[in-house]
Image (cartoon, rainbow, N blue to C red; front, side):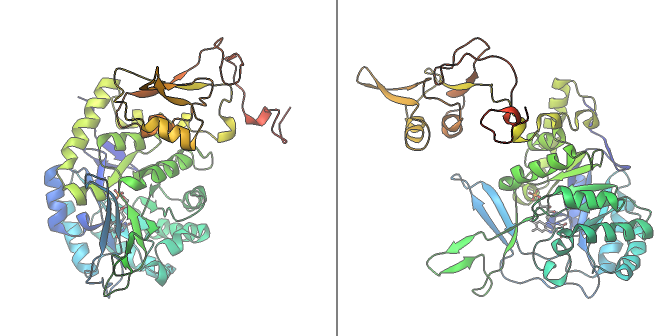
Length: 433
Ligand SMILES: Cc1cc2nc3c(=O)[nH]c(=O)nc-3n(C[C@H](O)[C@H](O)[C@H](O)COP(=O)(O)O)c2cc1C
């Protein structure tokens, strides 16, 4: 069986699955139960200075659903921990003492002053916890007070606070990044410059979940008024994956350990983050939706996959797909694909025809010999993948790559098999010749 044990920035845990800083990790009783279920580590719910914050007493959470009511997106307007700092520190210390083989990382958010960080870091260290995560990510509530994403959106602040933390703490420092920024490489580079041991990402995305059209009021709302919140869950995964990959392939942050977060629900999601450069992963929404026991499936699934593929450790798998992420301008413009309808699996619903006809390239016919029959017109197909993406039957539609020597019926050109990209294309006014 593959070895799932993980060492992330020197922090050891029996598996790479940590619970992210959020309600699942906000008190001893939760964390105790999470560890009993098998989680490798936790990032404790973010602690701050006393007097502690106050949450609203109306709905803090909202969800969007797939047609089968599975939660595909989640949103919250919760602040950091609303319990006294001492309570959190005492519980953290007790949990770490009782579970020495599990990772316990403290998430911290205090005002952006050297004195505030200098004051809190020794208290954190006294708990015996394994590391500190700097919460520069929360997009609501705390940011209006000059914390969270208000810091995370200014690379100079990230560097400055990280330097303070490295100065006043011996613990590994993980900088948690906000996705509410145009180019995530900038804050990651700043974290590295400041001496961060790792970055973790993503925190939640600024969002409004919807509007109650009968009441003409934003949802969720408290006494009729709402505020933007943080979006996460499965719908956020592609955004998180891109940001993880951007940092993993940036030469200026190459080698900086990454803790991947955002929409991880299954072992496959986790494996994708690892493949794109994460050294471990953190989970929040999936635990809030399905409970702590999902960690069993996460561990079993990842372990089986690693056995099948011959990976002996998570580290061996980490970053394996990064080399396949590139800039658009470097994609091979000589590569040609065509859609194929597998008639044995096709249920004749006609959706591929409708969408191709209405919005793409009119490349799927709907009748043959006067009967309902769907067929690809290769002379029109550009291989865009829309039909494959919307087909309700897995395997009924796929794309096939033309081999060198085959003729593309749309352009009349023979596929050369040679690589050529936009940088040298004759239609590119700035082509390099
Ligand atoms: C209700 C809720 C509260 C959260 N509180 C915190 C927090 O206190 N500190 C923090 O760094 N992130 C917080 N997060 C963000 C999560 O740690 C995580 O980064 C985000 O939810 C993305 O992961 P997911 O898609 O697995 O939920 C919170 C998320 C949720 C849903």
